[in-house]
Length: 553
Image (cartoon, rainbow, N blue to C red; front, side, top):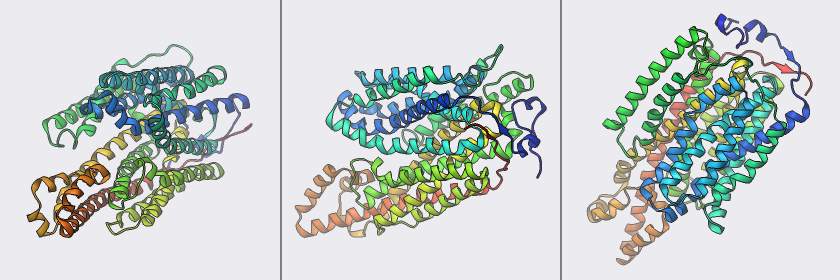
């Protein structure tokens, strides 16, 4: 097997192939009590972070109704997205320098403070500002949780804990919409934010008294302020561009092109600046050499993670629209429709983690995960306006297994290669996952919107197209009208006034809307399939090296 090239100046941070190929056995660095209680706190934090992401969306209609400012609704999520994503690589690097514990504790405190402030917001501008502050804390939670698992357990044992962590994510994704719906129906929407506080306090106390510092660097450390500033200046416009493109501005508008152009220019400067710091032996916030000198492991892992996320987020966005708009499935919110997908994702995550621990091999798990994902996406591509919910359900179940078994592998892979840079490589992986999700939502949303109206008008009969007034047809240019019983009932009442012919015309019009929506969602699924096929090609280039294991646990 060809050796993985590793720079001499990184010999202390990376495993040489000779050491890696031997199945090393390391002593247990922490006691069982420290390990168990730290993991309890970490899993509480994981649950807290994911619950917040899923629970708030359910309450947004009530929040807007109370605080008004509907025109600002997108900025509530955009502000949180930016502040919870952009700092991730910086936080990971700081944890390598100063230790996980202080970073995690500060993150929890900031997150809980932001939650309390968001719950007390009196206007939309306040809510946007407080959600942005809360996002700064959230940026530390997931990266530190995954990194701490890497500190406590060797790569051979991390698989099962990554699987457990993935299960907690899926559980929170299921409970979030349910809890959010119950709170908004039976209490004030403010408790959607306040509920974070008691869970967070429990995790905070556990980690304060039990958690070891973990990987704190001894001696003088230098902080790359210029690199951090360049990273922020480059990623903020990049994320804004993908978030606003296709929604508030056209993809080729001067605003979007300006954001993308500025982001690319700054990121190019960042890479050259960080590479120079790396050659000087400093501690850059982002180390390009980690990718270039481990392309077939670290580089491929980042690439497949982005591809996986683009496909996953786009598909998860389209499935509820198809279920509710085309199949007429009733649900209190779209999150419940994805519950079968989440359940099998839990199973896939746990099983892949156990397989990783038992075999010590990861490439075959990564390949199988992508293949199953492709099979599930193919099942989605075959759906049309005449499909049944059972067909959608089977596709979701298969897709969930693929996603659950595929995504959790790469954290273990990159941590195994750079054991002295766990914080940096883990946080960079999460950052790329978030970036892929943002790209997926933006690209798939644009495909859905741009393809729906032509498909809808093509599905209309010539008679309807000429007889119905433009105002009626215009109302159905947005397929989300299918999800509004109130709007549909008003339009239907107007058709019923014309007798049986009016009722028949209304039924034909609805069928055209469903056909158009089914076609546009089909286009999203096809694009997701094309993207994940590139992932299958990329994953075959993933280099496999044995995973270390440890005595004593």
